[in-house]
Image 1 (tube, rainbow, N blue to C red):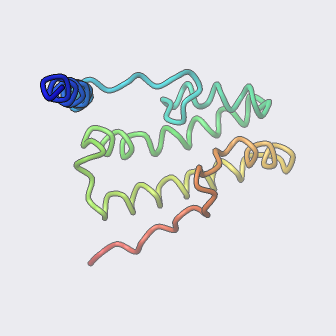
Image 2: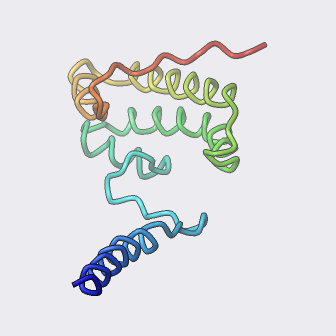
Image 3: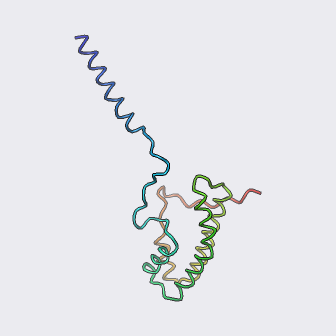
Length: 139
């Protein structure tokens, strides 16, 4: 009876040990999952195409929005090249301000009906909280 109990205890311990070793493996840093179709981050051309389809932009609006995105593209590319993990708080504040100003410029090009559609396209926060306002840059 003692041998059976000892075997049962060892078998149970082995069952708990095996899954913890397989799930504890870390993925290599370079292997990021691919974003699904329609994910938030898009290149400027794809974003313009998306907005054109969803908001029914006319040619004039498309040209103005393309110009706005092109104006901000070098700054955004510099931040993207830096990598999310390497951004400072000042960088994050600058990105937030840049995105906000770009959004306001794009919004000014839209008709009131398109502005309402644009609001509906914005993703809702998962936790239901209001978006966080950017912190002032440290000086």
